Every structure is written in structure tokens, then in C-alpha cells.
Image 1 (cartoon, rainbow, N blue to C red):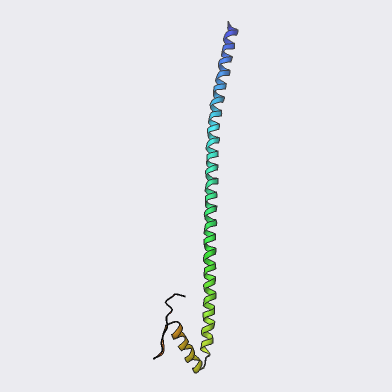
Image 2: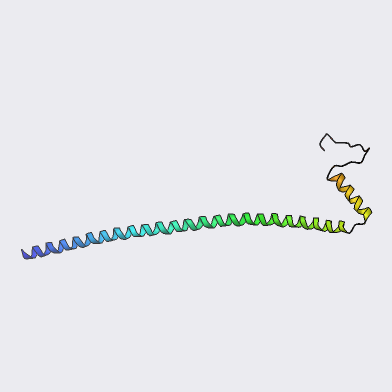
Length: 120
């Protein structure tokens, strides 16, 4: 009888160990799942951040190109102004007349202006 009781106790202890191992493995699995979720979340955040940074870099490059083209245009204008600064009185008068006619649409007294209504 005593042998039966011992064997039953051993079986109970073994089943309790198995239950504890099953509980521990479930807890470990839950921890690993949470770890995987955290790693996945961090990786997703990193990818989104990188894509956002690439888009920003692209926008800034475009702005830089625009500003560089504006600088080139302004340098050309500055060179023209320096050239005009060295004009003689007669050349300056001709230049002023040219600007008035082309940019400001001025005409001399008695001149006729023909407008192309075809739009060409």
C-alpha cells in the first residue's frame, strides 16, 4: 500500500511539475509575443521615419535648386545694372527709352500702335 501511495505521490508531483512547466512556457510565449510586437512596432516606426526624412530631403533639394536658379537670374540682372552704370548719356537715354517701350508699353507722341488680335 505504501508503494502505491508513493507512486501516486510521484505521479501527482510529476503532473504538478508538468502543469508548472506548461504555465511557465505560456508565460514565456506571452513575453516573446510582446517582445516581437515591440520590435515590429519599433521597426515600423523606423521605416516611417526614414521615408518621411527622404521626402523632406527631396523637397529641400528642390527648394535649393529653385534658389540657385534665382541666384543665377539675380546675378545676370546685377551684371546688366553694372553695365548700364558705365553707359554714356546718349546710351543711357537709349536704354531708358528701350525699357519704357518694352517693359512699360510707352509710345512716342504721334506713333501708332498695332495690336495683333489673333494672339500670335
